[in-house]
Image (cartoon, rainbow, N blue to C red; front, side, top):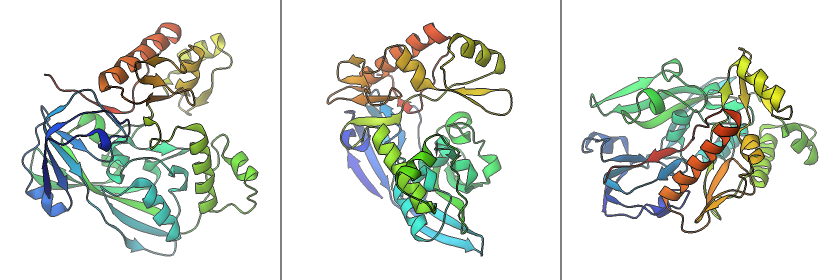
Length: 339
């Protein structure tokens, strides 16, 4: 465990927003967790890779920075392997490592920024795959009871960019490791639009897990701004899910609206398409802007404040709501404390 006084958090969030904290505690082992001061959600903040967070204010208390590393195959047979991964491991590097081990299941989730501990919180997903398809378990510290808990997948309440750890019990648990059940025999999942075409453009005839990973990386780099070059938190808004009646009404009024049936009468809509149709692509507020590369991404052009990002997000939400009757829900977590 390492403790830092008055740290700047600008280099610790992918939007590059300036913020500070009273203290930062770097958690490096599970043994460190037992000795941590008690977490107070009224003034403290848990931080992972900083790729899915918006600092609208400074943190008046302590930032608990999860840096627990380690990855190991703990169970295996001829068909599957169970991998245990520390919450502080970089997600994309985990994907690369799993492919090097001859394991598949994560290839469609390549190049997603952030740390492994955030994966179940968001139920991360991309190119037709969500974490829920491979999650085997989650180990966490219960701040309220001061004890270790282990969650089976069904106990995590995983939904679309949602989970027990994000909605129902936000700030109660510090995730320290997760377990993933990966395949030894590759089963391609190529249903997402553009993925087969990208593989074809690459000249791939024999589709392998590394080839799918490469295709996803190419697609993401082409579509999304690089956080290392332009501050951003990836997709800022969720694609809204609506009931059959509302979906039919919207599709009738806007025949070009991309819509994906979910099989239960509901449908998922394209938030990016709606934002772009509202003429918001490229909209700028100070140094906060809607990316001209992808309408779903809000970017920091240099010195945007967290409040500017939040104000821009509200502008996007109100404009889309006025035109479509849909309230877009942000994906990143807003960190905002009273003065």
